[in-house]
Amino acid sequence: MTFSTISRTAPLARFTRRAALALAAAPLLIGSAMAQQAAWPDKMVKLVVPFPAGGPTDTASRIVGQKLGERLKQTVLIENKAGASGSIAAAQVSKSPADGYTLMMLATPTMLAPHLYKKAGYDTVKDFTPVATVYDLPIVVVVNPKLLPDVTDLKGLIANAKAQKTPLNYTSSGAGSFGHLSMELLKQMASFDMQHVPYKGGVPAITDTIGGQVPVMYADLVAALPHIQAGKLRAIAVGSPQRVTMLPDVKTIAEQGIKGYDAVSWGGLLAPLGTPKAVVDRIANEVQQILAEKEVQDKLLNAGAIAHFQTPAQLGQRVQQDYTRWGQLIRDKGIATE
Image (cartoon, rainbow, N blue to C red; front, side, top):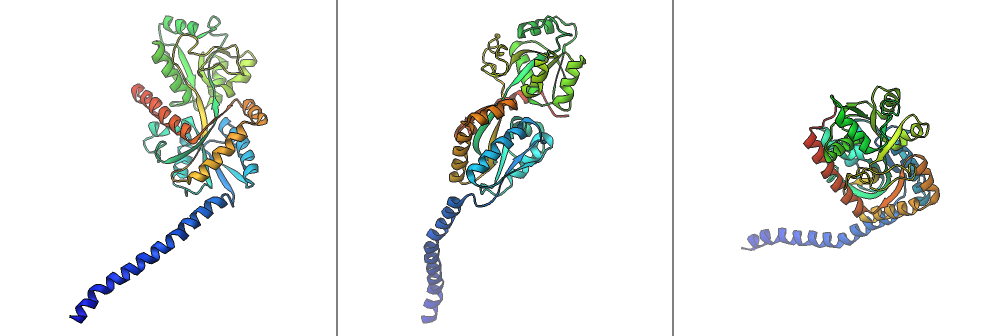
């Protein structure tokens, strides 16, 4: 009897002691985690750009990254990792430690890549923590003024397209690009047709639009603006809900009769899912103050981007809405990458 009683109670006693030790250690572990967050950042922060150096996403990242580094008193290293509309970088970042030392500048093509690539390797909505919107990147419908001399506005383009016996061609920077999706949305809402001629990149697409191989393009404003200013391309409409300061006389698509039309490419900071809220809020606060600086606004504007801050919650809502809205269009139109 004595042996039996000891054999049953000893494991319980050991369990009780372990539970007591675990409870005693819990405040220490919580305190350590809080101390780590409070010390953030105590080393370099990496900002991954999912596109090559020199583009608007890269330029905006470097402008904001430099200022962020100054405010955090730590180096913010820009790492360019291009490929598959940015999905290679996004998949890598989604699997990085959620400690605040890895960020990514999400651009619209990367946000939508899981709709276009069967094995993108991440879920834009579920695999990241939204931090802050940084900029909007206007897009613009342009025509070759020599090929379409009478097309000076959207109404004229639609009338010309409807009058063609075979569909009028238009181009963009590629199949599944934001210019492609935006024109398909316009065609759907305005009930007319044009034939997409995809190029591999915005530069060759603009070059051939200027050269007359294709008469119409839906282009990033940053790439098209110098040619618009030189008279080689004519801007007839912008996709944003409001006019843009770089082209104040060019009406929006909504102003030209397509009510509710809204197509804006944008960039925002994401972190791996589970990044501490205190760290996310700290970065968002710093970005908000950075984007309020006139110097930063001017630099972004020179790069063709418009400074636009949104909170983590607002960015999360924007990602969800745009991912759903454009994903539906991609499915409806049967759009796929080539």
